[in-house]
Image 1: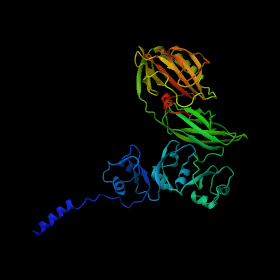
Image 2: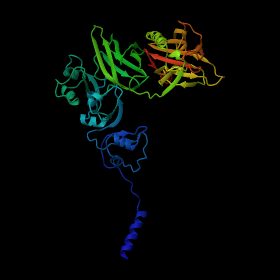
Image 3: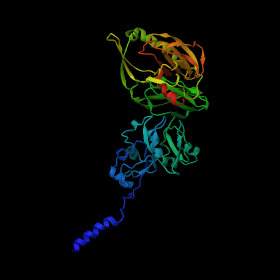
Image 4: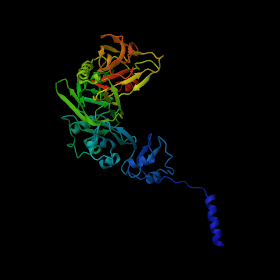
Length: 467
């Protein structure tokens, strides 16, 4: 009887006593801010902790209850403090400087980012960087040729030993020319590290760059410096922007293999000496699909296509020094518009009634006709000068406008062209009429955009301003 009473009291206590939810363990560690697309499992996998440990450290009982912006303590990263943020590596950043900047031991930094070797450190790669609380920031400085650590310390109002301690140097002799160091003080916000003295700053916009994308390279230099360089295999043309920053725009070919490729900046100093800096830059896939198209066989004949290609390339290979546009480009057709085919799609052309085959990609955007009531008019998407207008076998009635700085628009397959070479066009002015001339399967406008000799996705230029 006594046992039955005890059992009854125990069962009643389950309903009477309040439920105690799980509480976070007393766990210290860096804080990660939940990003769109994250879930607890993916976060646990990335930081190499178990899901149970992550939930226990943050008092989470339901793994599905996670919100963007939520702060999570990451256990198992003893020695790492601050808020864990994603930082895209930019030109001039180095593995050594980032380890110094975070003040995290190198083995923990590698664990945090799954880095096997410093050689994996490319421009455009995302790294997890602990951002320290106030008082832990440091300003970036760089050793130039012939400069001692003592000189750097004096210029930054600190001591050699303070510099050595912050940067894990063995002594005043341990600094290397062009090495990036950190000195006590507020962060100076410099976007680059480790660059030669001719470069004050350098930045590549919108990293990582995709196949068919436009690279925007902005460089601030010492007075009198002339810039050049190379992205992959294309020489860079630099022009001075309104703010005094030198800018190069460079297209990345849609068929370029995704992976890492070279980027080099060259500086010619007023005295005639030269300085260069090179890093590998990550190019990512544009995720283009494949289609097969049947076309008249005569439009696939290399004796016709190659001379025509070279003719177009010769027109768009000059970079004029005046930038004619401001802000985003406009759609070159009337509203409402219909896109019939997208940039970058891999195409296999089959010659009708033959076994002729040509592999390539779609080098522009095709605008069709939404309805018979739609106007067939073609308009200038941005200001520029007409530099070509003529009938061609593949491109049909073609017009090319030079917008400046190596940026050109091509308009193919027109029924009629209303402009002449040398004519200056304002945004929205009439160019021609949509047609079906050249290698087509129906009437449309093929709008092509060239940036320093490479076709890029024109739609990028409709949604964001360059440079």
